[in-house]
Amino acid sequence: MVVLFNYNWGGTMKTFLGTFLFCVGMIAVMGSGGDCDGTCGAGHDIVTMLMISGAGLMSMILGIILLMKRITE
Image (cartoon, rainbow, N blue to C red; front, side, top):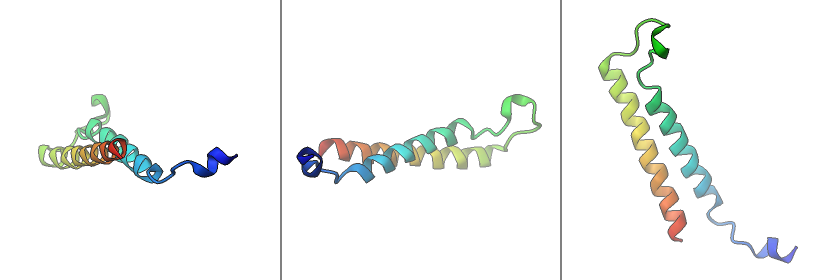
């Protein structure tokens, strides 16, 4: 029981947030085309696809930065 109280819980939120941002960004980049394998009709136009994939890429980069800061602490 003493070990639980002495553990440093300081970076748990940073780790969770970094992992969440990376995963959400990866899903956004993978689904940015919006065509669902060609059976659902037309996908997004190029501007919408680039905006979604750019936001997903920035989310992934921010998540990686948070995770790298957590590792170096």
